[in-house]
Structures are given as C-alpha cells and as structure tokens.
Image (cartoon, rainbow, N blue to C red; front, side, top):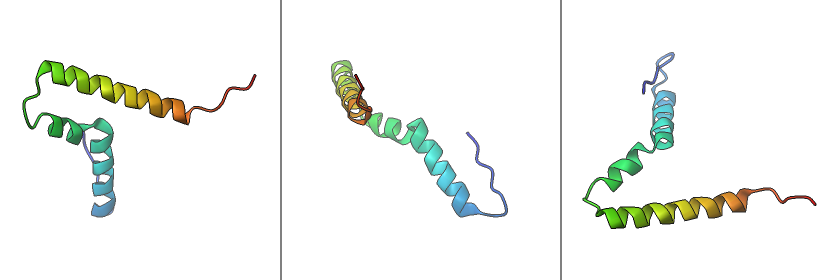
Length: 66
C-alpha cells in the first residue's frame, strides 16, 4: 500500500491513507488480534458478522417488480 503526496497536500494524502486502511480492514483486524480469541468464539463472531452483512444487504436491496 502506498500513498503519493501531490503538491505537498498532506491532508488529502492522510485522508486517502485512512480511507485505504479502513477499506482493507487493517484496524479492525488489529483490534481483533489484540487478545487471543478461542476458535469457537472466532467462529461465532464471524457467523454474527456474516448475518449482520446479510441483513444489511437485504435492507439495501431494491424491491423486485412483478
């Protein structure tokens, strides 16, 4: 990952870096790895996250016409 600074615009480069880090999920991963997580707890957390993503995707879907 690299950020290029154009015309000494550090603020824009920092915003771009933060956006890229968030999109890649690096900070979330670091927070999750801060403490040891048992495999059963990790599976349960991943299932809950997947269910949350599915509900959000269903909420944002456009209604079907028919």
